[in-house]
Length: 73
Image (cartoon, rainbow, N blue to C red):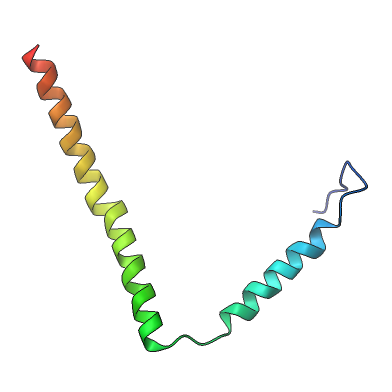
């Protein structure tokens, strides 16, 4: 659904959004070397590992440490 901008002096946002989309599509068509692909894959795997494995465990350890400090008081 398109919306008319409140300020008529602003440029047409749809045209820039379409240009950004087309640029992203064109960029995705460029081929990566195997080495670049492997580097990107490893980087994303480490990020996901950190988010789903390391951070919850760190939060659990922090909660345990805080609860044991409360018991000592």
